[in-house]
Image 1: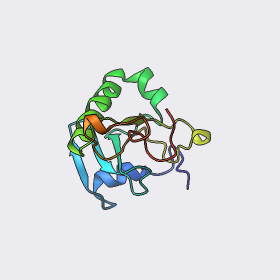
Image 2: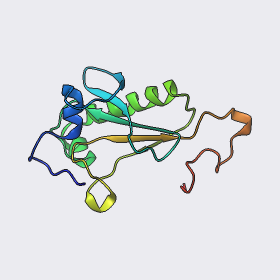
Image 3: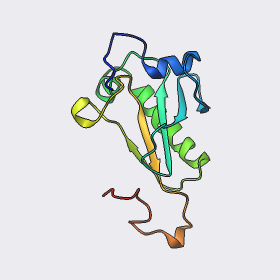
Image 4: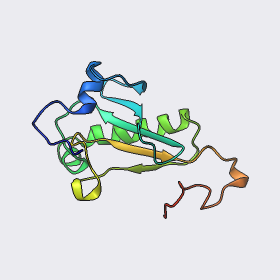
Length: 131
């Protein structure tokens, strides 16, 4: 299912309004964080601005770089709270890149926390993912 801009409120806006149930695991005045309903890694969180003004990260960076920087800060805190010492931050931009909800959001993906001495490149990435 691909959600188009301008038709109805995005699923994320509906979650924020309480119309769709979801557990918000972290929030600030400008963003909120939820767990992905179809996780691609042991830790898979979504960092979502409370505004639906920007369909993707390119628009966000061009019009509100402060909010983009805040999303990165919140992603770092959310990953740490989930027990991740390292994480990937992914923004899908456009349907061809896998974006299905056109309300900018970042995916935080990480393996379970691994003690520093036991980490390897393969152990630090979700299964099947390269660098």
